Amino acid sequence: MKPSKQNVALSPGQWAIMKVVWESQPCAAPAVQEALQPTRNWAYSTVRTLMDRLVAQGVLTAEKVRHLTLYRAAITPEQAQRSEVLQALKNAFNGALTPMLQCLLKTSDVTPEELAELEKLIREKRRETKL
Amino acid sequence: MKPSKQNVALSPGQWAIMKVVWESQPCAAPAVQEALQPTRNWAYSTVRTLMDRLVAQGVLTAEKVRHLTLYRAAITPEQAQRSEVLQALKNAFNGALTPMLQCLLKTSDVTPEELAELEKLIREKRRETKL
DNA sequence: TTGCAATCTCTACACATGTAGTGATTATTC
DNA sequence: GAATAATCACTACATGTGTAGAGATTGCAA
Image 1 (cartoon, helix red, strand yellow):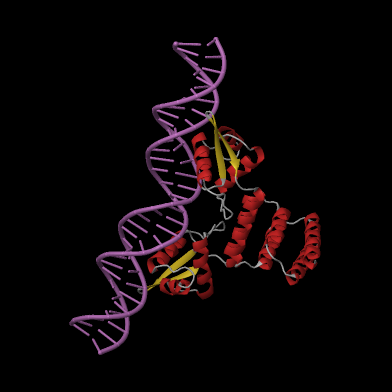
Image 2 (tube, helix red, strand yellow; image 1 turned 90 degrees about the vertical axis):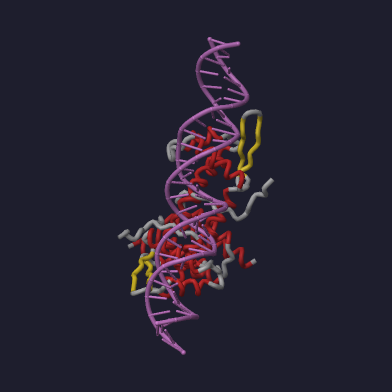
């Protein structure tokens, strides 16, 4: 039994799968395929292969119930997001937070509401840090 | 001649190469290899292969001067960073900025100085947005 | 019980990436 | 000009990822 990893690096295809699983676990491959039909229209065997590979990597777990294989996520969305962010941070910004934030703010359209929310986040963070 | 792409997705190895090139372009493969010696200790042929593949993808350009091949970046660091960030944003957060920021703040240790800087960034952004 | 529908298993192929060896070519120096 | 150093080109192999077909198995329904 592979331990569930902390250092996952999911590919776009894998992200697509995981999002479905997180929303409806435990779930079987055919259901996942169906859910992904609109976006990627993958054959069943494609989905199945991807999922089995995720099991091999310790990102999903598989349990056989009679003929059926039920999959569950072995990591939380938060863990996966964290990995993704850390990876970008390390690869592209040498781990430096501020430049990344700067890039993020410059890059995407931020609504005033979001800006306000961000300020709130920062204030909270500051309060925590002070303790 | 491949056009330089806007939608690059650099792998960690490719990032390593590109960082060196940005710093000392135009440069030849042996120099890049040497510069990377401490971190990755790749053989010359490894570095060379990676660089030629980057040329094939339009991320680097190569120019032959006699026997020597000089490489230059076809994209700026900013473009590459932008791609990386956007990719993470899209993959892991469905494009939603605030959750990503939240994750970023939660995930990494932020110094009070950085917090202050971030607030400044946001204030600036707000000023821009108002115009 | 026979047949269709759902599901599974196995295998395969192309392309990307990490990694490098080997032999050829060019330039330099004695 | 012959030996040496620097550089290159070509080829190769393993692993990961995107993608899927073909055939086997199971379960329900008539």
